Amino acid sequence: MREIIDDIFDIEGSVLITGVLVGGKQVDIAISEAGTIVGIDEKNGARDAVEAEIVVDGSESIAIPGLVNTHTHAAMTLLRGYADDMPLQDWLTQKIWPLEAHLTGDDVYWGTKLACLEMIRSGTTAFNDMYFFMDRAAEATDEMGIRGTFAHGFIDLSMEEKREAEIKATETLVSHIKGLGNPRLTAAVGPHAVYTVSPDGLSWCAGYAKEQDIGIHIHVSETEKEVVDCVAQYGKRPPALLDECGCLTPRTVAAHCCWLDEADCRLFAERGAHASHNPASNMKLAVGRAMPYHHLKDAGANVCLGTDGCASNNNLDMLEEMKIAALLQKFSWNTQTLLPAGEAIGIATAGGARALGIGPGTLTVGAPADIVLIDRRKACTTPLHNTDSNLAYACNGSAVHTVLCSGRFVMYDRVVPGEAAILKGAAQAAAALVQRAEEAE
Ligand SMILES: O=c1[nH]cnc2c1ncn2[C@@H]1O[C@H](CO)[C@@H](O)[C@H]1O
Ligand SMILES: [Zn+2]
Image (tube, rainbow, N blue to C red; front, side, top):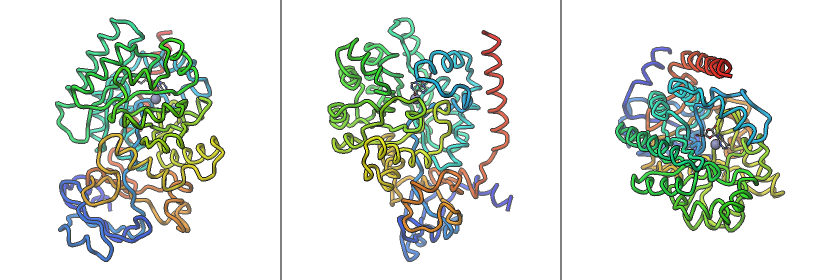
């Protein structure tokens, strides 16, 4: 068994998954050596599509597209449980930012390794990350075999000197990521928020993203204070300010979006910007309002899903996040029919893939073979009256047993290569980080 498992992570060949449940039907999924779905068919049709090097029996599994986590600070896994139960501003300024001042590139490497391990274990194959030392985050992600979009968290606090340094850091990261030439790793520009980046900084970010043909990743309208302060300072709400600076584009992923009004939602739709819902973080930091999913949907804006960092969630489980999103929407807007199970899965898969530009995010011919197999032999998958319901409401990440990204196995039968070393390395890095911070006090 061990040998077969070790082998499966190294084989770069075609794959056939037989008899797996997709959308209530038992199908075969054929995957090319290049990592694309080339056949998906009932009645053994896909078996002819590829001479498979690896055949996986899918008869005890449900297959879904890889989950896409559209808002993370992956290396914040090291800060998991470091500061909880505080308001956002105090949490950031009193606890998180002082500790982050002591972060090193090695910390980010180990924190991101741990994040990838956790994401793979719970079925995530792509994430949109904003943090520091992002070359090391990309290195960790490359080793783990999943997809990442990496943005340096750009914060200028309206100081020209800081802005110049952030511009340099952003340019260095983008050319580094592009230089790797790895299709799983992409760069983005990451202006942190309207309360930490000046209009000049935002305009530079927009221009650079356009020039480099890459995305923008930003926090938008997370708290009421952010909106009120923005109106007081600039005479307009955050989305209008961002739009004026050129930051609302079809390549923009805006995290949180809790305090959007209906006009903001229409502006998002008009510009093609993507709204990333982060319900667990929003509830934990008690930001006071849920993303207006119904207004975004009515306006025709794309909604996707994210966990935010592990200091405000405190895990990266997208199956759990789906349930939290679906429940929060119903509860907040007093509407039982809002964000039903199928739509919750949709924002976690197709919505996210669209936001990050990584294919359709569906199990269809031509799509990247980012595939998650969920165990049918679990309490949470028994009975299976409606698989969408089981996935959105009953399961969490522990039901995931096998994960492919771009046609390569990153977890097989719950084994992720190197897990013990990752847990040890990350725990050591976290302890040393806190110790350095305490010594500096
Ligand atoms: O919910 C949040 N709102 C605002 N900032 C956040 C949140 N979570 C993490 N960060 C902070 O964003 C920066 C990313 O580069 C980091 O400083 C991180 O701590
Ligand atoms: Zn965030």
